[in-house]
Length: 71
Image 1 (tube, one colour):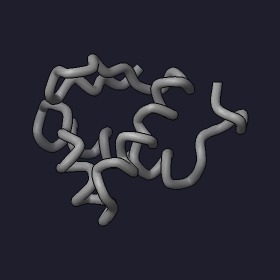
Image 2 (cartoon, helix red, strand yellow):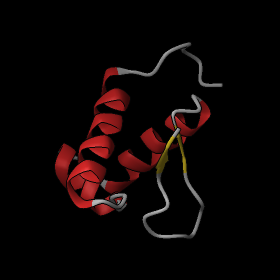
Image 3 (cartoon, helix red, strand yellow):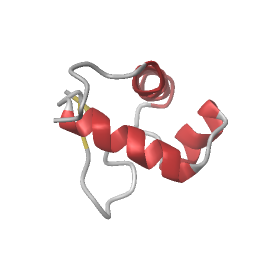
């Protein structure tokens, strides 16, 4: 579990971007898609996704594109 007990504001924004992207396109976004939406680098998004997985808000399969799923 991450040091804090609840997701940070940037993590929650990323979660909302995921929700909106899936609602609009019908499939999950890539790291590049999320990075563009948030105007940050992909490694920043990867860290946020890792935290969201630890908070059990999403699941993702390493090495598989567009595998982000909302829980």
